[in-house]
Length: 118
Image 1 (cartoon, one colour):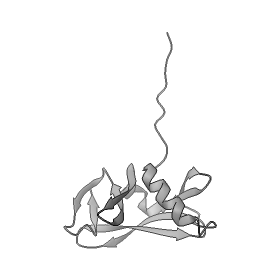
Image 2 (cartoon, helix red, strand yellow):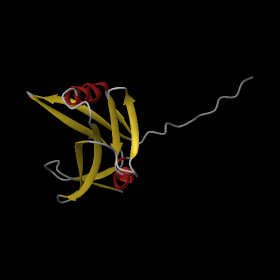
Image 3 (spheres, one colour):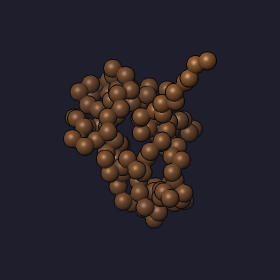
């Protein structure tokens, strides 16, 4: 008889293959940059996601090394808001859109600008 130990994943967020490809294509012309995810107070329900290309992570950012071409830094302030979020890139008609599949969200504004968690 063997015993298996469950070790939960330590990453705060995950990215779909489509999101990884999208970010890698953006970084081709900015190879010295990383992707940084943060949040800001915004809209009618509370918070908005902010994605930026940054020169480096901040000292208290959580770092996710996706592969040799893609590093994502998550702002310390955003960690409780985005825990277990999946980031996806989808085509809606002719437009590509970043989608956040955040299990913590309990309310979103009608236009999709902001969200709130429990």
